[in-house]
Image (cartoon, rainbow, N blue to C red; front, side, top):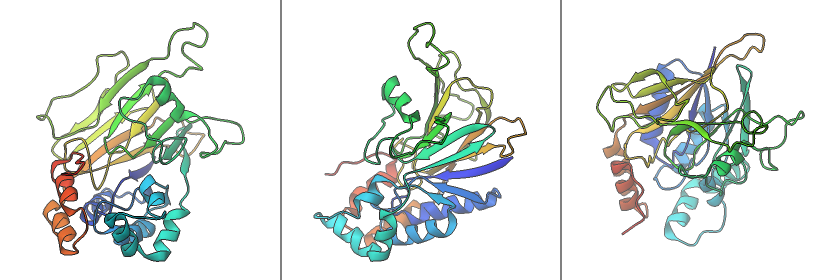
Length: 306
């Protein structure tokens, strides 16, 4: 069975990235995919870019990665550009849009925000049609030679980890005229409830966890026997927005040999890190918007400014 670590939205938070990479190494994982937004918000964008290039097998572009290569007017953007330098900015501009990988006979597509653009955001409360659009082949994702669309889609951008199942319109409702419906959803948040509690939808087909361990911050769900399409958000390594100030990433596991029948599992992992050090690093280099960065990484919530 192949295991791939999926990380996203580091946003210049080097201590958080280092903690996640240490956890990945401890688990014996050697394949790492990054779903973008390496830079911005935090003080260590240059160091994060260098470390991601060194450790990740594949990287896709995020909106901050592309945006920082454009002309900047605000002090924060100018500061980030100066800290990155021309060579890193050139790298960020040419990062690919998406990754396709086959596991256990399922096509898994990974990108930063949506199938349309790095700037097109799919919020957690999006409509069913908006969610289904994530599985379409577009000019940005490219179209496989046989026109196949993905069975599983993972993305970053919103900094809130979750997983849900959608009925496949080609299998459900197409012949009966029934509306497309969610088959189930579960929040990947850990640590916000006492050990043993399980938050889940009452809809039919809701994800049941094969493993839950709140002491180490892991959740695993089996996807191999599920009908329909799987959509998940990997969360954020550097700046989570779900109220849990810990780094978050995913591990997806499946079989690469097409001759072997096997399921796919998805595991969410929470990793504590030295937040005080991360805050101190921002103030030491006099990064613009340091206070906003401090509030976001200490609370795990978005902060729009004073």
